[in-house]
Amino acid sequence: MLPILLEQTLNGLQLGVTLFLLASGLTLVLGIMRLVNLAHGSLYMVGAYVAFTVQPATGSFLLALFAAVIATAILGAVLERFLFEKLYSRGYLEQVIVSFGLIMFLDELVRVVWGPLPLPAAIPDMFEWSIELLPGLLYPSYRLVIIAAGLVVSILLYFLVTHTKLGMMVRAGASDRRMISALGINIRDLYTAVFAGGAALAALAGTMAGPIYSVQIGMGEAILVQSLITIVIGGIGSIRGTAIAAVLVGITDTLGRVFLPPGISQIAIYVFMTIVLVWRPRGLVPAHA
Amino acid sequence: MLKKLLSLPIKHRLLILAGVAPLALLLAFAPFVFEVLEQPFYLRVASRILVFALAASSLNLVLGFGGMVSLGHAAFVGIGSYVVAILAWHASNEVPLSLGPFVIAGTTDGLVAWPVAILAAMLSACIIGAISLRTSGLYFIMITLAFAQMIYYYAVSLQQYGGDDGMRMRGRSILPGLDLSNRTTFYYFALASLALCLIFLFCLARSRFGLVISGIRQNETRMRALGIEPYPYQLTCFTISGAIAGFAGVLMVNLDSFVSPADLSMARSSELIAMILIGGVGSLWGPLLGAGFYILGQLGLGTLTTYWPLFFGPALIVIVLFARRGLVGLFVPGRS
Image (cartoon, rainbow over the protein chains, first blue to last red):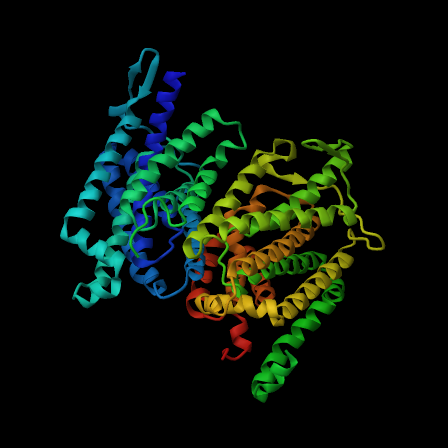
């Protein structure tokens, strides 16, 4: 029992950090720009496709990761400047449908460029070994690397948001965007930077999770819904809340799949979210709005 | 509506007439036209448009009229479809359906299965609405999505009823005096259902209840100040909408003879919202125009290229960005 529990908790933690990488970008965009971007999952997909095209070509996982992050950040910046910027003054309804149209477009674009079959995504050679965590429990090192990398990025992001000037502007933007623009901060560039940063984190998540889940069309949609749940549980706009919620959702989902009967297991996180919202309608850590 | 119509300048009156009259004629005589052209396929497409218009109208009631952005409405449509299909499955396989302590026989009788389906959708809407309406804005969008996902995964887990692959329904529901398996009969039945639904929504919008709902959308604080608690009104509105959505689901499964979890997915909910946005949010004719545009647009692009989403997605974006009031906005002058 204990080895399974440990193994699945670690798997849950790994899903949790993946969710955090996606959800942190999503929650900042929502909290600061008041923009619902359902196509955030498509950026995750594009990142993974770029990475696992570059990796076989160059043989380097790090290079692939770098290419994916840069390419997706550029795509994010372009989308923000030419599309999403026009939506800040519109309602959620219009934002939902524009991102729905964008998902349709990007999914089909990937199908045209890469074909309908899943892209093979191998675990990088240097991590193709396992660690014996407990007697009889071998755990793949790659998953531990994801957890470690996710934690490092999370800490860096937390530091960036809470201890730097850029982070201060971002937080100020989340509290009162008109005021910070009145203080002479170029809000337009700040928004583009936040969006591009969120896209880069999505690509990072897509690349790291690619070998574990599958690199295929529609991979973004399933995880997008989980990320949305994460930010709602955490409290929209709160990085700290998102971090807590990501771990809770990751572990609930993974343990649920192992220990709950099918049919109920996939529903566990939705039940969890409903309970949280009934108890605290603005999430675990409500951001000041 | 007639009064409102007559109060408009003559130019606008003609515009509306020019828009509505051909549409009404087209809808009334579609079966004959397609009969003459020997294109029965298009009658099916027309029926599909009507059924989707009904589903979109139900969503329009909460979304356009009540200002509650629900991202999970396909679930209620899907519940209606699944209940009819499951009852029919038990009837044709002659296996009784056990629900906890109760054991009931399956049925293909529309007079039994349809009310059960509508009631199931209505009850789900009532429960989901009761919880979701405690939140508002973005949280409301997300919680309705979450509930829809729960129902989606529940449908996927129903292995007995096809799981992920969905289930076929052998033959349409049986109604006394109406042969729904005749496509012309089905078309007119769907047309009559939509017309009745639109008349109902028209009356509802002008009733005291409708005025309160509309008031809550426009200014919730002011309604509270007038001594009206929004919650029960919103919940009633949501529940009525769920019932209409369930009825749309009943028609949908009869049209397609098939239902699968995809019919209650987030993508389907988004499609319904897209139809409303294309047609015109909160307008009576919007969902019909939107459903027509959406389904014909997909079909038209699909015959031109296999990569139709590559063009349809951007087209949606352009419409949302530039046609602010939807297709209805082309015919009807700005609201005061």
